[in-house]
Structures are given as structure tokens and as C-alpha cells.
Length: 627
Ligand code: ADP
Ligand code: MG
Image (cartoon, rainbow, N blue to C red):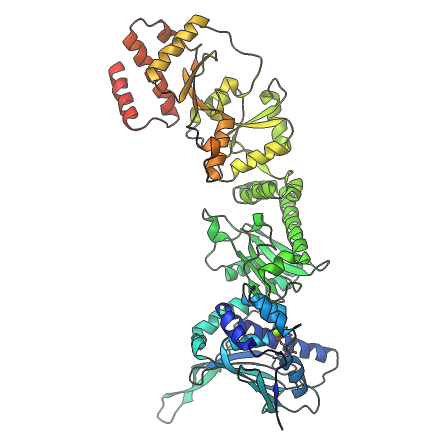
């Protein structure tokens, strides 16, 4: 029996397209062929379980082997096999809606997955790397004859009697000259590790032989025999396929190590398991964050029935959780998933919402059940939570109860707790509560000190995301505003009615102002004389909260814009009630007066780390002479 025919795709040039156009992703041929073998194996198991197949199942493992000399790669399974009729039906008639549509669409397609997925070309992806492909197969059906199919990459195929004696399928690829890199143990192992590591059917790769002692010969020497060692490359029952109740913490930690061998232990994890309205399992880990966020992105692996698909999960996992690690497995996501599919698919949006909710619930649980442990991890999870608060309103609705504010004393408060704590001291005469924060406690130490003396609490806001977080929270909370501790002198951070008495007369104030203007001689520094608490510093340099934020935003946006082009706008506040200022005002020696003013100003610069270079040298010299 021999039969020749033409693959019914109505176009002559499909194979050149598959080969050339899809070249960049060609390693997926192995994923496609091995998953077909897995499907065939699962099907025979099911038929057997249903009593529709009564023969022996036998050893169901799949084998991947290669022959460097013959330039072949072979994938064999003990699945349900195919009859010649089935080959014609399933392999020859490529199922896609029309050759014209295909040829048109391939021009726009961005990756191989898109085409393979859209046109059901799983098996045909083998022609990306092979000149010709052979199928040897024997169906499980009673009385089935073995069949042999060959196709040389044109649309011509040949079917004849096959040689398989046992049920199953063996696919042999005759690797083309451009793809010989795949005829390497290292390369194939790498691809199998990437796509097939957690497939549900054991996969044996290559044959490794070892020597084993086999008694002694007549001369008393040890004899050896060679033994074949099975090299199963996959874990057929990865933890996400198991029930959480059957797993211990150590199992999760071990799996994490298996996925990311050189990483520190994760902080905690979430076991995902849902079957309605979509099917999804997985384990997501919260890693310890490192400074280099970019390196930690794209660590979530997406699977479909245990076949690895991609680690670009951008649309499935909300942006703010992109730093999570772990696996997601959903049969609702096709193997050949493409970017455009993900963006359009409605399941993907539901999955995204589900993951957000699960993460919020997990955090809420941790917070409720073990607050000390939660607080201990806050420096790591805080970033996720704050990022989530900023980027996702639904997440904020849950997170507002467990997002924490940390003060300079390292105490943590929820939003409600904090409001209650500071409202009595930090409510201004307009009824707004002012939250005071520092982004650099060392540099802003003098300000923090003054504010604390007034009984104010200072929040620590020194992570890269805090600027955005503050802006967002301010929007959400009622009658609350944030002010950086150096935005004003302590007396003025919160506008109250209890302004201290003036010590200087109006005339003296004007005089002090002009003395300092002359001494400082810098137009960017705007000088003001205020009546502050006598205990406050004589001179303080501040930068208006609003102006500073605008400049920061302009800088972050990259462009300069109006605010970006403004010079730094410092205010020099002279404490008219301070003894030193009274002394300067009444000093008759004009040179000494100028020196003292300059000295007081430099001290203010110094305390904020603003005094550098020649000015610092001058300051040191002047100090020595004044002493
Ligand atoms: P898909 O897997 O999406 O159906 P493929 O092009 O990968 O598309 O395979 C086409 C069909 O060929 C399969 O649906 C199956 O019926 C048949 N087939 C492929 N490989 C095997 C195999 N190893 N054993 C049995 N049948 C197979
Ligand atoms: Mg397939």
C-alpha cells in the first residue's frame, strides 16, 4: 500500500513562509511535538480509564532523542497513535479558514506563536527546522495497521505501511542545514528545561550509559557491564497541581529554589486555585526585593496544562505585581499565546482582577492574623502595596486598611491610626491635618529636631515610590495634606493662631533684612524676617512644598517644562526673635555685622549639606578668625 497526495492548504508557499518567517522562534517546534505526545498519552489513559481501551498501557514515558550523524531528532510516545485515515484527517488537512487569509495575515503577525496559534499549525512548526518529517504510528484501535507518513516540506506527502510494532507515535525530524544547532545535547536540554520541565508525563531525554560492577573474571579482575540510565528531565507533579492542604511550607520553599536556584527565600506565597469562571492554578511568591527592580521583573512563568508558554505575563498579572515570582497555569490560555491575543481576551482581564483580589486578601489576612510578622516584612511588601495603591483603585479599597505609614521612630500605623495619632497636635487653623515627612533624615536632621520639639510626628518617606504615593494618598484622604519637614520653619509648618510676639520692631526687621541681603548676595535666596520661637535656629533655609514637588515632577517626566526650568527656589528665614539676630541688628561694627550674618547663613547651609567647595573653605577660615 502506498499513497501519494497533496496537503490541502490550497497554496504552494506555506512551508517557505513557516520556515523563513518564523525562524526567530523556531525552538518551539520541540514544545509543540512534545505537547502533542503528552496529549496522545493523556488520551490513551483516559480511554483506558473509561474502559474504551482494554490493552496494556505499558510504560507511558515520552522519549526525546537525537542522532548527530544522521541529523535527526526523534520524539516518541506510547499514546493512542493514529491510523492512516487519522493522519490524513488530522495532519494533512491543516485546519485553517483559508489560505488567502493566512498569506495576508502572516505579513502582520509579530511572532511565530501568533501564526501557529491562529492557524493550528502546531505539528507543522517542525518544518521550521526540518527538511523532511516522518511519522511512524500505530493506533490503539483493534486491528489497526502501522502507518508511515513522510513529507519533504513541499505540499506533497506520502503514506505507506509503517513499521511500529507497539502502540504509539514516533516523529522523526530530518534537521535542515540551518538548524544543526539543535543537534546538540546541551541545546535540546535547554529547550526541554524551558518548556517541558513540568509536563505531566515523564520525558526521557537521550541515553546515558554508566559502568556497573559485574562480578570478577577468571583472573580475578572486576568486570563491568554498561547500564542505561533513565534520564527523566521533568517533574510530573509540580506543586501547583497539588492541593494546598497537602503541602508544607518547605514544599513551597523547595519549589521556589527549583525555579530560581540562586535566590533568597521568598517572604510568603499565595496558592491560586480557581475553576470558575475560568480555570487557573498557580503559586505566586513575594520575593525579597533587591534594588535592581528591572532584574526582578518577568519572573512569573505562564503555563498551559503544565506546558511552559512564556514569562511575559504583562497583561495577565497587574503591572504592580510584576515583581512577584512563581507560576500561573491556565488551560484557558492557548499554547500559542500571542501578545495580541492576551490583550483582547476577556478571560485574561478576569484573571488579572482575580490575582489582584487574591493578593489583597492574602495581605489583609497576614495583617489581621499576625501584625508583628506583617510589620517585619513591611520594608519589602510596602513597595508592592504602595505601587498597588497608586495604580489600582480596587486594590486601594482593600489596601487602605493595611497600608502602613512608618515614622522616624520606626513605628508603623495604618492610615486611620495615624490620623487619630497626629490630629490633636497637627491640625491647622483651617481644619486640615498636616502629615510631616522626611525623605532624608540625616540631611534634614535640624528640621526634624525642631518639628519634634513642637510635638510633631515625622513620617519616613524615603523609598523611590513615596513621592507618587504621597500625591495619591493626599488625594484620597479628606482634609489631609503632606509637607516635607524642610518645607518651612517648624513654627510655620502648620498654620496655627499662636504666633509668638515680635521682638524686633518693624524698622529693625527691615534693617536685618537688608544686612542679610548684602551679606548673602544671592538673588535666588529670598530673605524673610519672621517672628519665631526664640529656641529655633537663627537662620533656616526652606524650599516651598508646592514648588519642590512641581520641580520633582518635571525632573521625573524627563522634560523640563515651566517648573523644570526654574532655578532652585530657596527661602532664607531669619528668626527675628533669636538672640543672635538681635545682636547682629545692634552691632555697630559693620564689617563684623556682615561677617556674623554670613556666618549664621552658612551654618544654615551647613546643617542641610548645602555648603560645599570654595564657600565651605571660606566658612572654615571665617570660623577660625571669629574664634
Ligand atoms: P493540535 O495539537 O492543536 O491539535 P497539531 O498540529 O499540533 O494541532 O496536531 C494536529 C493533530 O495531529 C492533533 O490534534 C492530533 O490529532 C494529531 N497528532 C499530532 N501528534 C500526535 C501524536 N504524537 N499522537 C497522536 N496524534 C497526534
Ligand atoms: Mg499540538
